[in-house]
Image (cartoon, rainbow, N blue to C red; front, side, top):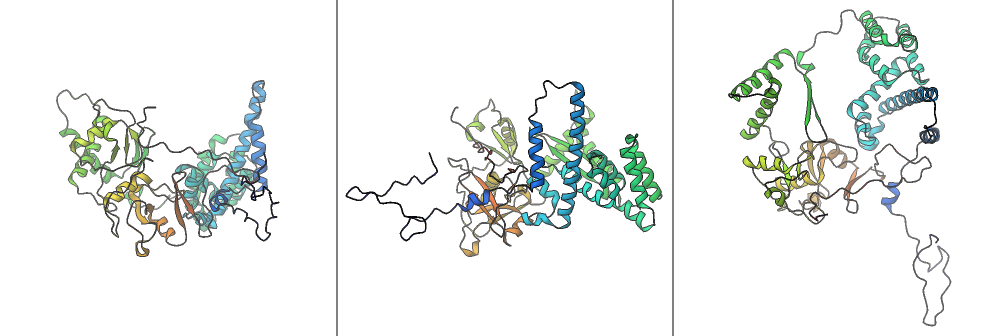
Length: 473
């Protein structure tokens, strides 16, 4: 069957079927215009040279390995390592160039680090490493040439960049150090017989350039706390505190831990400290003395269907926490022992429906429903959480827009500004998700995969499951 229009031919009362008029003729049916959404969804293909590399790698990935000998497997692994090194170096070079030209601004982002995270799914450390490698190869051209030949791994670039920082290199340039010779020494170490000595060689060079080391700094500048969320919602904490700050935190946790000890307490010291940290958070959340975020005081939010909530036996993955993690209904029942309970009515598509009165400023109950629906900033490629977001009117209130959930979207401060200066966001009801468009009308698309021929990739996205499914299936 062809792709002709399925519109039935016109039939006169006598049964005569007129010949169709050619397109553009007077009285001819107008040709259907392509959907602007479909046109915007067409992905841009990569440049021809990159497309050729992708095609070659796809062929290599389809090779059968069952009959390969050990020597052939090792040779293949060695060759693919060089390919990986080549791609790492070229990606770093392109990202550094894009950063210099502020290319990410075309997609409404501040730099290439958030662009890599939001558009190709890189983690924060991965994005930082790519950008740091690009800058390193710019200031060390000998090393850059070796990397461009596939002789330097991503890990080796990380070692060099961590020790021979931009500040160390700038200090050497100001002191008249022969940086080209230092660059050559580093490269010779990597490509020579003793690449494992790279950290020691780099440290000797850093000590030669700046024997006094970095100047003293405010000890609090080294503080950091990183909270990593696992798939099951549990958290891993990693951080560092200066001497005075660590003393304060230890004193507070030790006081709470000691007050909570009782006879027969078999918890380890680490367990008591972790419990004390959670108890410290409980105390301040209960007191209500923490700063208010977006007109809502900090709180544990747990979304659960009323039927699951009333079930004392517990239901797995029946509760959605404010961070988006799903946990057992027992978590919600525990929180409800000492909590306010707010009712949000969900429609048949599992999205919150109208939750309240209209006014210029978005009230807390509408914002709460928007947080349930959006989860955070809806600007394509942004992952800022809900507590960092403003409630934006899609149709501005001054232009007659209602203060309702349908007319509300969560946007972080930067992207709220972008939307007020040319970018637009729209909710696609067919796919149940937000879309973002640049000032020129083109859609911002994310994902590293594009068809090498320029044809649209098949939409592999599956619809999000409803928040609550009680069909019994």
